[in-house]
Length: 104
Image (cartoon, rainbow, N blue to C red; front, side):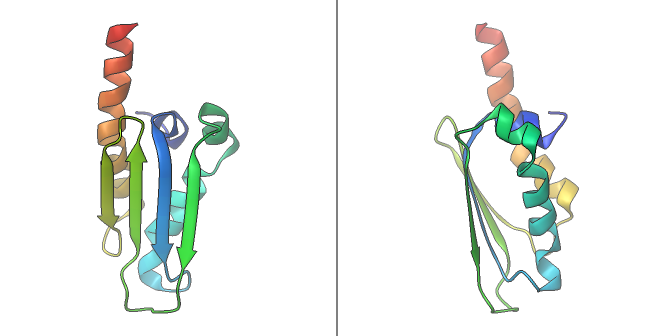
């Protein structure tokens, strides 16, 4: 999976809960900036992106992802780098892409 845009094709919902000014939320904010691009929206215009913010700086940021096949993934991203987040989200998306290519 080369980009967040190609990954977004296999997602139905991304929900990010974070304290936007907390240093631990950095990866979540960067992930959002990569998934909310013109290319990603063009690849999947029905992708639902939900953001919830709170003021509790001690509460870890969480990303919940729902894939087209119904599988869900929850990541606590406070100690993760954005590339690790993208890699985790992309794992199942890659499997769905391979399944789609095999059936074509």
